[in-house]
Amino acid sequence: MTQIRFQTFALTAEGLACRRGGRAIFDGVGFRLANGEVIALTGRNGAGKSSLIAMLSGRLRPEAGSIRLEGLDDMPLAEAAHLVGHRDGLKTALTAAENLRFAQELLGAPGLSPSEALAAVGLPHAGALPVGYLSAGQRRRVALARLLVSSRPIWLLDEPMAALDTGSQAMLSQLMQGHLAAGGAILAATHGPLGLDGARDLRIGP
Amino acid sequence: MTSAFLAILRRDLALAVRAGGGGELALVFFLTVVVLIPFALGPDLNLLSRIGPAILWLGALLATLIGLDRLFQADEEDGSLDLIRSAPLPLELAVFAKALAHWLTTGLPLTLAAPLLGLLVALPGEGVLPLTASLALGTPALSFIGAAAAGLTASLRRGGLILPILVAPLCVPVLIFGVSASDAARGPMPLQSPLLILAALSLMAAVVGCIAAAAALRQPD
Image (cartoon, rainbow over the protein chains, first blue to last red):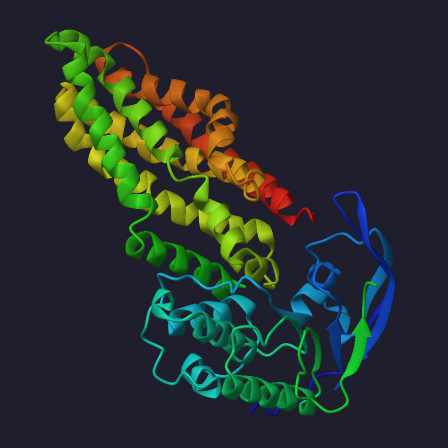
């Protein structure tokens, strides 16, 4: 695992409200996320979990409220956070290793090499395979390997356990634990347990 | 920052070659148009020779438009645009890298194929160089103008329908000066000034197109 210690930071959200298609989705959502902390974002389908993550990644404008990141030399949140959402962000025509090398060069910050990252998510032999040949669960693991090739302090994960088998879920829990131990923070939308001690629950919607 | 720029450029070039997308498609379309038009016009060689540069330029323009709607849409759909947005690279430069890759896989092959296809439209020997030069200087403008429109239509499901309507009016100056540079070989018209204007249009499109596309892509929902 990475031994990089992240700088001290705190991500604060206050009074976030979301409206989509004229309908109020949620209102007054707030939290504080600092080094080594993990928030499990829960709520029924359509409660706005993905919308909240989209807001944090800057893709959705909050109807009200504010998002602030302190520390990390005033880095914008988009550059401090890794996003693994429903869309994997992988090119099916490129191999898994090429996809990861692209992410590494694009995102800049150092991390594991693509082959090390693939080994860490349990796909040591998938590097030379085009992503189009991989199953949904394997693609998800390649997307998760992106978290490792370039090290960023905050992980925003949208249902990271979806499509993963039980073994891979345990593997992901372990990766998340390593990230927390290195001083990172995680916000994950989830329906099941993340397998992490000390995860705070943030329930949105009714 | 340079490595992020090169990463996007390299990836898009690899994708164009591997996925069998944009590049060959544009070239095949160009070839089809230029091969078929002489048959439609009939056996009047003088007429063909006179409108030959216009045929080649129109073919190149339409071929560039094909697949342009996918420039950002494909990245938007699979989520890699979110990845690019979160890179420490200014979005304008990311757009520039993508548009440059588009030109290298579309405009450049069209330019290189044009002298050969010139034979099919009875292009006189002295007209080959002006035509190739005009395409080389003018097609980058098409890619960059197209990038701005592709940025606007990235999140529209049927963006391919509206994109040519947005792009066509902006491409008119390029078409006019491209054809007039290619025609210069036949008459007393100067060659240098239309070529310089084409270069200016390309440089302008490279700046304005990238800023416009980045502004459109940055807009949150």
